[in-house]
Image 1 (cartoon, helix red, strand yellow):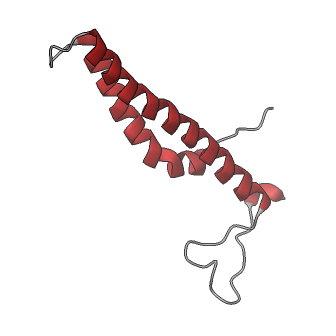
Image 2 (tube, rainbow, N blue to C red):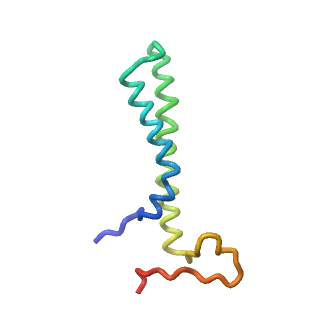
Image 3 (cartoon, rainbow, N blue to C red):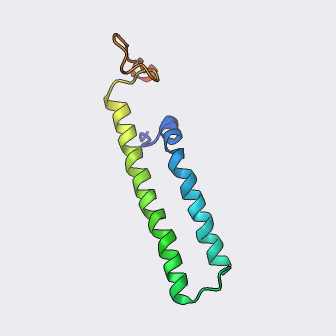
Length: 98
């Protein structure tokens, strides 16, 4: 069985990036179907560049940060929230490492 790159917790961490991606995608589709500003061809090209470029860059950033989160969780000890800086804190033992 192939291992997943993004588990449930990693996807939960990345939802902060998924929400803007869906908002940008909504406007890309909306402006493709309607032309509310009655823009010409140059204006529409500029409009799509200003929507598609951040969408692509944010998608790449989301993927790379997801890989970084997943690889760090696999290689470094995981502590309870807020306990990483507490003296004597013990890492959480993973149930899957038995």
